[in-house]
Amino acid sequence: MLTTFIVIIAIVAVIVLWIISTQRKLVVLDENISNAMSQIGVQLSSRFDALTALLDLTKGYARHESETLIETIKSRRSVITAKSTPDDVLRQEGVISEALGRIAMVTEQYPELKANQTYIKTMDAVQTFENMVRTSRLIYNDSVTKLNREIRMFPVSMFSGMLGFHQRDYLEEQAAKADMPSMK
Image 1 (cartoon, one colour):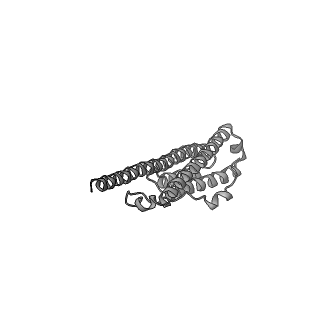
Image 2: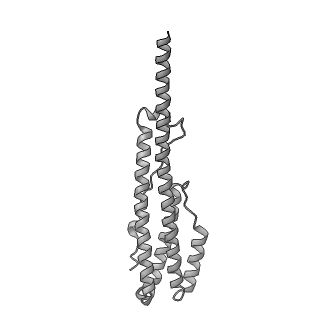
Image 3: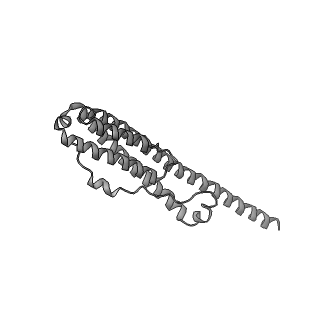
């Protein structure tokens, strides 16, 4: 009787320790996703800052277009945080894509703007931030893959929902990005 009781206690202790270990692992995976989303937010914010600098450069050439675009960006810009969703990121990237397209139209009308050294440096910065966003997106999706895989695999799948962990959505590539105009 005592041996049975000790065996039951040992089994329960092993299960409890496994659940605690699993919860800790899922927390780490979830935090990696939150961190990756925060990094995307930082990079998108930097891209918005570079876009604002580009718009300031275009003011001398197309004042009305620049002012309209600045107001559009201000009204549609939101901050991407760890709690943001992939849809939030896609909306912000859409605003950036629209702005870059309109800036490209202005630079086509004013070739001297395209040759401006400050414009060239700022476009290089925009491209650098784009590459950083791309890298952050890869890290985010990799982190989502790891969490989703862990949550879906037995025996974790039996407890993940009870522990408050659910599958996360991936950041999908925008189809319109392939059609982006060249800014150089």
